[in-house]
Amino acid sequence: MSLLLLLPLAWLALVAGALLWHRRGLMALWREPLLGHPVLIIESDDWGAGPVEPQVLALNRLVDLLTRYRDRAGRHPVMTLALVLAVPDGPAIRREGRYRRLTLEDPVFAPLRAAIERGRRAGVFALQLHGLEHYWPPALMASRDPEVQSWLEADTPPATERLPAHLQSRWTDATQLPSRPLADAAIESAVREEVALFERLFGERPRVAVPPTFVWDERVEAAWARAGVEVVVTPGLRSRCRNATGLPDCDSGPIVNGQAGPGVRYIVRDDYFEPERGHRAAQGLAALQRKWAQRRPCLLETHRSNFIGETATAEQALAALGDLIEQALRRYPDLRFMDTATLASAYRSANPVTADLATHWRAWRARVRERRGFMRCAKLAGLGWLFNPRPVPAGGPAVHPA
Image (cartoon, rainbow, N blue to C red; front, side, top):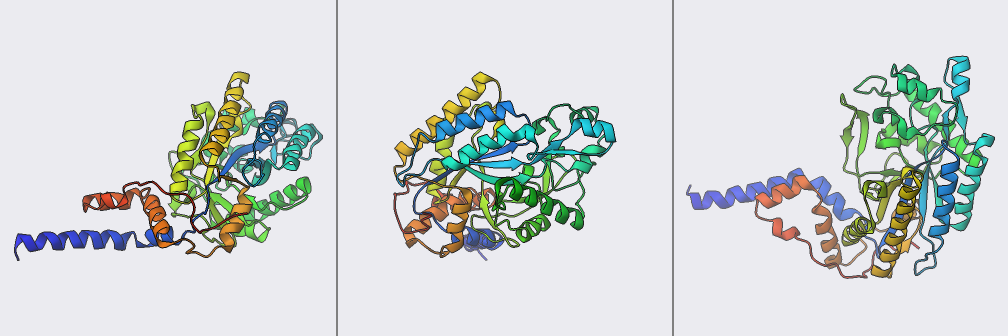
């Protein structure tokens, strides 16, 4: 067989192999519904039990900022608060020698609950479950790290951000690394306890759960679903463990927006807006532009630490958030603000194929560009040009979350 014939056959084999290997992921990207207008949600983690005064100040300032703006439908920007419901009761731990917790029900947190409710009534805070704690209590109690023990026994409610990163995961036992799975009964009991406390605090069960450090497994999802949780926020994959170096691992995925899990539906959050790390409006706008090209919502992950640090740092974070919202509204007049549960409801009711073919094709190409494994094969086969970015016009029939 001549070389001239072998080369095309080799090329065809490479293309066919890449398509076959990545077929499930490519089809999932095609089936993922398209949005009919840009959506921006600020997702903020780690609020709740912990330092009181700085959080109260920060939350009230955020309410004042967010209520200044409205989208075309008259809605304010929404910041979701992923809430931690308890921290260690240090004096009780010292007295009794066993783990005791201080929950958001305690009178010491009354001003914090009031600030949360103020934003909730104003329509700018949407409450989500982060966890009863931002850690697995037995793992902390078993730790031999003197700083961890000092943290557990502190007189005042401590900030979980001060813990070693691997011990901030709630749904794996990181007493030793690599971490070990939790027992089924322990998961079921912990989920029931945190959902019941959330309901007592806020008068309703949580609809959305955000796994701390994004380490969790399907058993946790199933337990959440049995307790009434409808939506799980994910970075586009699921990490089931912490590896020997303490990093999230044992990954499964990819996961796309609107995908169904064991009794829950997933929403993907894989962009970040952390002013304390130098992020400003430009970073948020770039993420929004990229997501709109893909006809996906832009969920920006941020943390309370941005807004409760040193005064100058917190003011810069507030200013950056205000600049982002103002410029986003100016750049995308049809921008929509909403909470994550509302977005998930829109995905739940959507027809998987909702846009005209040309719009769908452009959005799919933009999504595929982020699949590095497939793109390496495509470029090797000389097909990288097929996925080069092109402007995406506004409009087009698709999912229209109200």
